[in-house]
Length: 74
Image 1 (spheres, rainbow, N blue to C red):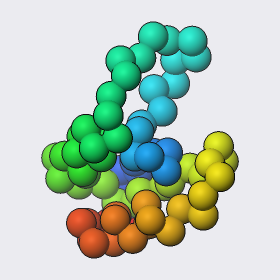
Image 2: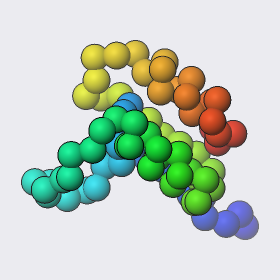
Image 3: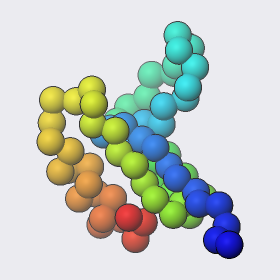
Image 4: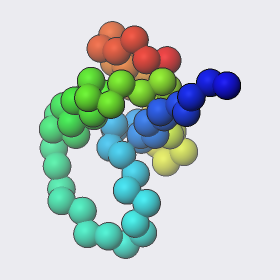
């Protein structure tokens, strides 16, 4: 029987949904959010990254390209 999989879910800007509606969030620059996202990927070594494009006006190709360039996680 295979073990549990690790999945990271992130928005197109690489922010991680915190699951706490109405929670006060520290405002961070996009470069800092991206840096933290890829640090998380290196530390946690997930099996899959899921990018949430529901609240975006972009196609997501830039985010997908960055993940492919900087990680081997599908």
